[in-house]
Image (cartoon, rainbow, N blue to C red):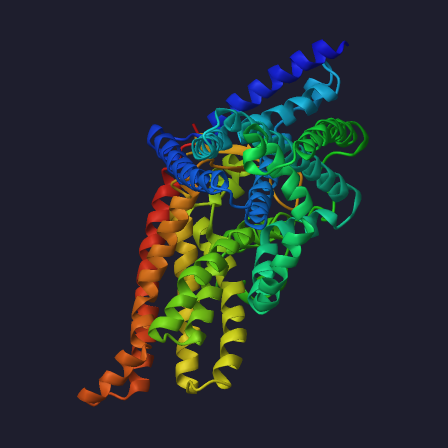
Amino acid sequence: MSATTVLAHSVRIARTEWRCHRRDAGQSRIHRRLLVGLRLVVAAALGAAGRSIGCDLAAGQSIPVTELWLAGAVAFAWAVWRSATLTHERFSRLDPDMLLTAVPARAPALGLLGFVSARLAASLAVPTLGVAGGLALGLRSPAVALTVIIAIAGMAALAAAVGVTGRLATQLVGTRLTRGRFYRDLFVLFGWTAILSVVAVFRSTLVSALPVLAGVGSLSGAWIVDLALLGAGERAGIEARRGLAVLGLMLPSLALFAGGTTVLARRLWEAEPTGSDGAHGSHPLVDGGRLDRVLAGAVSRPVRTVARERWLAEQRAPRGVLNTAYVLLFVGVVGFPVVGIVGVPLLLLVAFALAVAVGVAFGSDPIGVEYRVLPMLFTTIRGRQFVSGLLLAALVVGAPTVTAVVVPIGLFSSATLLETLAVALSGVAICACTAAVGVALGLGVDHDGLVPVPSFFTDVPAYAERGWAPFRRLAVLFTVVSVAGLPAFLGTMPAVSDSGAGIGAPAAAVRIGSLLLTTLVAVAIASGAVRVAVRRYRRYQLT
């Protein structure tokens, strides 16, 4: 097949992926307008900054190479990350069994690269025009706008190629190593916590090292700036040969990464085995075990089976466990500032975070997790049994976890034993509340709104909604759970607990009372959520 034909097929595949991505995203017209407005605001800000830099250069000041290098490095890293994310989303949606019977492997590989580059260009187009226009106005040279666009377009294309090639290489390594996929996805999901911890601990060292790092990259950074300001000539104080050299290096680099994309895609499609990693065999869900020996007389077998099935599903593909990353983010952004500002005990925050994390892990997205077996599920398990099974799955894990963490910390803190036990009890109640509300919200998802999406820790696609709907449900869940925990947070504040002395109530009694009130509120919310979940389960429609 000729190169022209392959290129035509690649363009057609890229166009198809563009349409599929827009259809899967399901963005409303208001959301698209808000996104355009945000890009216009960013473009205006960058244009103002570019005009200021251009005026300074026209006045004879030197180029701020260090600042521009740092800004460019951050933008390049974001572009690489965005490209890798798009590759992860779309590569698993390609159907190699169908495509490779009609076109060679390099056609869909180059089509994927073209799609990622086009999406990245769409995101950067308006901000790029703002920077180019601002520099052109500041230097009073229309040619600068053209060279700035060329420089940014070249770096964006290089970032797209690096992101696509890096993501495919990472996936290839994950298929070769037995546990490679697990550690790779674990770093992608929770590596940011380790990075933030390192930054927090070694902040002063990193700040002092930034000028050194900028100096190391000043050579390449200056060359890229030379390319961007090539249209200004001698007024900008740049060297034209270095700018042209950067342009000359970009072209073969793009060709090299495009070839690497083709090679990696061919290896993944033609040389690597498909299917799951086979780390776990088949397990019957109705066989007796420790759970049956403990709960056989108190909990029915269908409830135990639902709980055991959810544990096994999370063991094989920890989809619900991954949502705990949002709990860490919520606690880090909202919880710790509250502890520092109003004086809420850290012990209560730890219990709240653990309880919400376990509840989210086993109570979120029930329809997506059970998507493939929904017909069998609805014909064999009643609504109350299904909801009770998920609550059991959360409480069997959450109650021991919260107790094992909270009690030792409470014994070594200033809290009394009764306060520590009350915190643990409220944490267990919050866990049940979180799981119940999560199941109730998850059973409101429309069956037709779920589409196959790439999943972490396995190459088997999962079923989930696209767009902002899952995040809105998660926000509602956090809001409801926060309302349940509000009495405990208010009652344990020193300003509130100490004020009880005016009416003859000891501070410890106020704190314990507020914790017990949170327990009652959480149980009440959980009971209402269970009724809603059972009603939605009974009325759920598959078509």
